[in-house]
Image 1: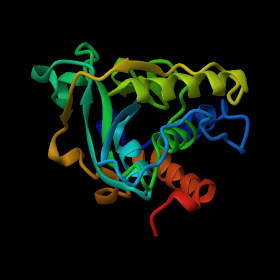
Image 2: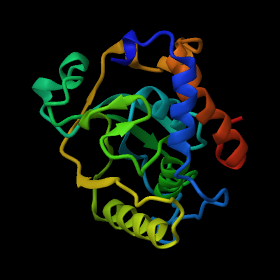
Image 3: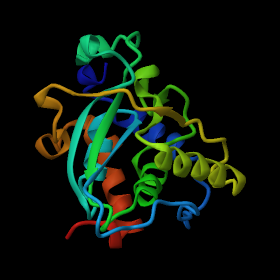
Length: 219
């Protein structure tokens, strides 16, 4: 379990190199099909899973237009939405984040662009870096037909353009419920920046985000 993982710097660096090796192009494309930005829509929500929710949460909460982000679980029942239970890999849950955002400031397609290019490696199946199991799978939980359409079209776009050296493994499935994780998981990176797991797996994502998409980041 990652909470017991203390001294693994050499292994983590190797894993980080392997996990990013699937990315072939720096010039990551915008979603050709997106939900248009609007100044009249109310705040929207997106639920995404991409490995350990600590790093995914930290990436998205730094984006302009993101008003709230919660680390939690999606894909299983409420009764099993507890970290220790989910960690068994037998609940159907994936570690996920619920993003509340202003569609006038950032579109769903832009969120997915960051999701695919920075937040995780979408070519890994049922794992992310040092974490293994279905609870770490890559999944988009769509809330409406528009989100489904954009997500499926973007995955096809990325595969057809061969942006990665391997096919995208991300699942696109209907949303049935999101359950917040325990309080100590919320904003974990900001409260534990020196945790070895954070240092080797998640802080590089934030550097990549600032370097690749400065126009999308909060100041």
